Each structure stands twice: as C-alpha cells, then as structure tokens.
Image (cartoon, rainbow, N blue to C red; front, side):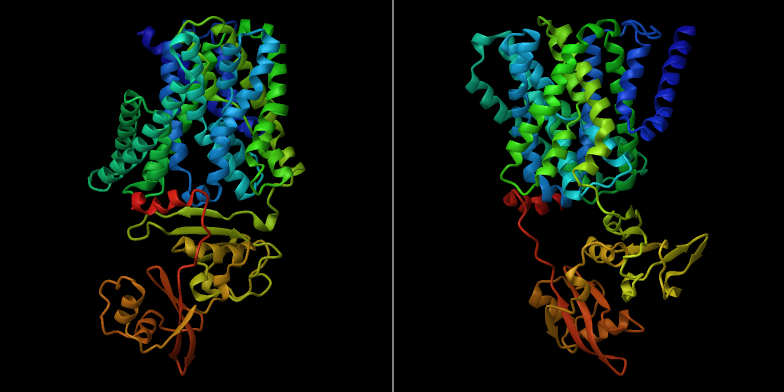
Length: 587
C-alpha cells in the first residue's frame, strides 16, 4: 500500500505547509500565490528537491490549471456586487479589453529586441503576460491592512476578474498565426473574436438563468446546492467551449448573474465557493510550480528582469493612461491603478499552450513568463501599501467601511448585521439623534455589552451592531455610525405630504405599489402607522415596497401629517442600456 500512502502523505503535507505559510505571507505583504508557486518549484524535480517527480506533463498541467481557473473566474463573478460593478463598469471594461491589447502591443517590441524572437513570437509572449491576476489583486487589496477608495478598488477587482478572456483570445490568435500563417487572416481573427465573446456572453447569461431556475425550484439538503452549482457550471463551461465560445467569459458572467440573484442556499453556496476557490488556487499554483524547471531559470533571470521592468514602468502605465484619459480619474489614481497590475495564474497557464502545440522556443517562453510572474508578485505585491499611501488612495479612518454580515434567515434574505467602531467624529458621538429604526441591537463598550435601546450617549471606541433591513438604509447608517457621506434621506421628511386619512389601497393604486399582504383595503395610512408603531415619534418610517411613509407630525399621540418618500433617483451608469436589462435577468 506504499504506492498509495506515500503520495497521499507527501501531497497532504505540501498542502498543509502551503496553507500555514499564509500567516507569514500576510504579515510580510507577500501574495500567498507567490508562496504556492515557490513551494511547487522547490519540491519539484526540475532542479529543486525532487520530492515529486515526473510532473513535467504540459497537457496534464494545462488541464488542471484550466479547470481551476474556470472555477476561480466563476467565483470572481459570484462575489462581485452589481452595485459596485455599475459604478466602474466602463473604466474596468476598457482596461480589461483595450488595456490588455495596448499592454501586449507596447511590450512586444521590447521582447523582440531583448530576446531576438520573431514578431509573432514576441506578440505571443506579450499577449500571454498581458492580463492581470484576479487572485493576486483580490488577496492583496483585501489582506494588505489598508482600505482603498471604493472606486479604485472596484476598478481593479473588476478589471482583474474580467480581463482573462481578452488575453486568452490574443494568445490563441497568435498561436493560430504561428501554426498556419497563410490560412489565418486578420479579418478572420476579428470575426472569431466577436463570435467567441458573443457566444460566451449569451451562454453566461443563459447559464446564470438556468442555474438560478433549477436552484430555486428543487428542494433537498442545503449542503447539496453548492455541489449542484459546481456541476452545472463545469457543464456550461465545457459546452460553451464546444460551441467555440469563451467558456471563461461565460463563467464570469454566470457568476455575476447568480451572485446578484435571490437563491436558495445562497450563503451555503458562497461559503463553499470561497473554500473551493482557495483550494483551486493552491492546486493550480502548486501544479504550475511543479511543472517549472528550477535549473533552467537562472540563465533567463536578466532578460526576465528587463522585460518585467518595461512591463511595470512603461507598458502597463501607458495602457492605463490611454484607457482612462477621458474618464474622471486623477493622475495619482492612474499611477496606482498602473502599479497594481499583478501577473499570475492565467499568464503561466497560457504559457503552457505553446508547449502543448510543440512550437519553437516554447520552453524558453514558459520559463520567461514564470520568472516575470514571480518578479511581478514579489515587487508589486510588496510595495502596494507604500504606493497606496504615496498616491493618496487610502480611505481616512472615518470613511473606512463597516463590517457587514449577511443574514441567511427566512424572510430576511436582503438583511444584514452591520458593525461600526465609533470614532471622535462619528455623528452619534457628537450628539446626533438616533432614529428609532436605526437603534442598535447591541453596543459593546470595553468588556461589557449593552442593549442598544438603553444607550443614550455613545462613546469613542464603542462597537455598535445594527440590523439593516435593506441596502437603502445602509447609506443612512454609514453616516450616523460611520461618519461617511451624509445621506439626504436622513433629514428627508417626504417628497409629498399625504393626508393620514388616505386609504392604503388608494395610495398603492396611485403610485403603482403592490398592496401588502393581509392589509385591509379600507385601512387608512394613520391606522397603518399606529398599528406598526405603538409609541410613535416624528420621523418614524414604514417601508411600502419602493416607497416609504414617514410621520411628519403628530398631535395628541395621533398622526396628523404623513410624508411620502419616493425611491431615490440614480445616476445613469456607464453602459446604461445594458444595466436597464439587469432587473429582467436577475429576477
């Protein structure tokens, strides 16, 4: 049984050691994926310790990496908030498409000059290294101990999560040109790109709809929902590729659709996805590290450093500045976005493709890409906090986001428990009145915990736990307890004044609001408010679908004037026509 037990022992020990090193990597601000790559490189037989041998099989490494990357991209879309996506969709998509193309375009001449490659080989190498890595960017932005402004953070995360399809397309386009240059026309590649992206986008939306429809209509143990999702996701990935579409783009869009939909077992799926994504990253980077030959890397160190320098200092910044030139980003913000262009898994994975196709210089190209990824992760990853301070994209303490915990309770799918740590400039510390609906459920002061309704004066250092029933209320809570931008709704007593004797059915009919279940049709607004608030106060609100009723005035414990707050108008986001469709496919 040694042929079974020994491999299990070795592989499991490598897995445990890799995970335990995350403690040191997070303190030193080194990307964890860099650690996984190095461990794979060290234990492999290509000049390392040789603990694991016989792993230099490009097809096996490419297969493992492709499946892992597919699941990582699905999770990237699943955990992307559509609210953040809409704010930075335009800039992110520009960087993920045009930016990737420009990066490859500006790097290729340097590769030809430094390495002596042909033009096709130079553009192939530049295309392989042109995309940023979602795993590296997500890890460093969230684990670096700093809070980046939401616009910058969203731009970087969405770009890194959606730029792989463009890099993959460029890579395989140049591979096609190298294999059969006389049979591959440029116009054919352009048409192929449009079809591949189009099929991938349509398949992604259809996959998201289909999985959501199935998940919300079958009922079994909640532990099986995540497994069902993964099975359907991989089925959709393979089917899209067989239809000559972009399977990676399809999975990202499917994740975006599902992550912003109401799903049964959403929180079980989310937790499972997070764990599975970490496992995929570990396996993928260990596999790619095992595949590399340590003994061949030193000879290519100098050209790798030269190309990395040009990529970090010239190609990536120039591409970013050209893409963001007409948009509202400051010079320092563009500098930071340019710097956080970390390379990672996709680049090494795509570098395996020339090896699989037995192209000339394929081994050298893989080693160059491997070294460039190591250099990018080591240098850029280590200096991100310093660069964030120099470019002034770090949030001040009072604007740092609160801790939000989504609740998975019956009837409370959109609710969350929000935690704030009060500072000196927090409005409630300075004496701002706390509306009844914003009363904390718990206040922790030192080692003591108190019922929120019993706290009249808040102090610096208090930890406040508030129950938020909707995202619309979170902006108001952020100002009240977090000191963020003040919401106009905090002092909004209604866009219109309504008589308290107006019947609820009449109001719902006039404003197109669905009548609440079990609500008598002849009930007046006064009766509705008095029934829901036993001890009424001016400013108390009652949510009625997309609108809210607010008590503007009361006389002798009776409501004498009611305000109607309409749903706030939102600015038209980039690609507005696309986002008008979001409700239709997210419902």
